[in-house]
Image 1: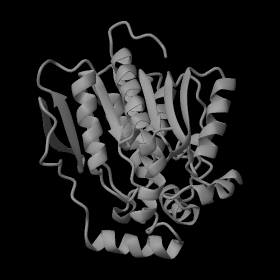
Image 2: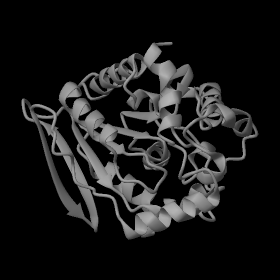
Image 3: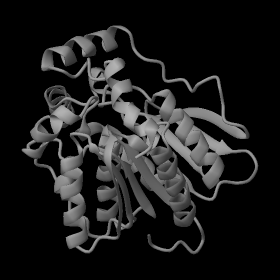
Image 4: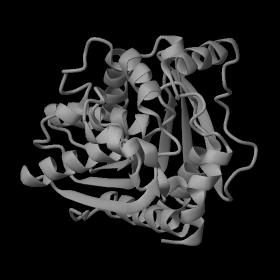
Length: 300
């Protein structure tokens, strides 16, 4: 484990990364603040070299397109950003999708989907994401981190039901079981300096509402038949990790095409963090996207 990775928990605690999620009351105050002061959805001023960023509106959604300028894109990555269903895409997301577009030579579509404080729910957002995926230029890769990983997997399940699966579904520390009922989460909580079960449960209940047992909207319960290859990353110092491990075991037992990367001692969304292990994970994702969008894409 690198020195940078060992320092990350200290950095998160110094930044009070969990301050908005410590209790349900903290979440409610944060939602009120986000409602009164919406976060920007514009791309950063600092752009990756040889990358073009544009946007359009479709059925009320703002959708960003990130494309390489050097050559035509080989396919499409539909990226669903994380942020607890209440935050817009962060700088780390923008850095990553620009790099992905440049190095994998794909177009990346990232919708600014409606968040909880704006009335967004799994029941309204997930079907629209699946619709965008079905309409996107193929080959298609679905990708998401944290809360966005849940949306990406749900959309992949819907595409599989329609018999038009994604060429690859890549998940970064995904929120899989939105009921947060796994007893191992409580045991993992003291190790996690970022996410807090009480706050995450408040957010997930608002997102999933009465659909906690729905196998499409709560993707932990989904049938993986026909879903296509899965590439999943998880750090063990993350309260989402116990559900990820269970899900990966079930997927393997069911014969799904799975590549799973588990990093002991690493934090939530570690592939997006500035550590050697994060860089290694990003390289693997770039390579996997290039494979999935090639004309003779092998399975993982």
